[in-house]
Image (cartoon, rainbow, N blue to C red):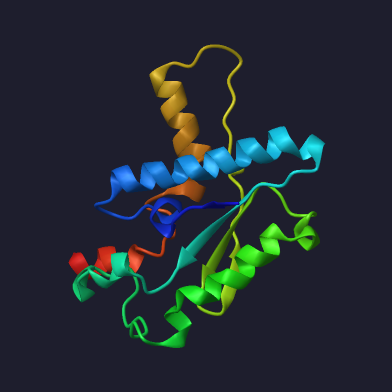
Length: 159
């Protein structure tokens, strides 16, 4: 069982090095799951969100979630993550491997593994203009602008 962060999964602005490290944990989780599944070993990652000493230092204006519950609110308790960790460590989760699960308050979510959502093809080597035209025709419709993110509100507040 590994732990990653929403900062990596969602691309936290201003934390590029941290985001890279956290996505490295996701890649490690995927690789471990692939390599260890033949032995019946599972590998998953939890992306927790809770009131901790680390997030307590973040200024309100820099918070990813506007109007988040106060630190003493039970929704923000790190204890909420414990049952998910216990489940992933138990035999009951033997069916689940190579996945990232988010744990925020009283919600648990399953993140989609990276998947191809659009492709362009050529019969030979690409020229710049042909590649640009193909990407703009077939990929732009699904990838124009920033992807949806938990940090979108934070970015909008700063604009």
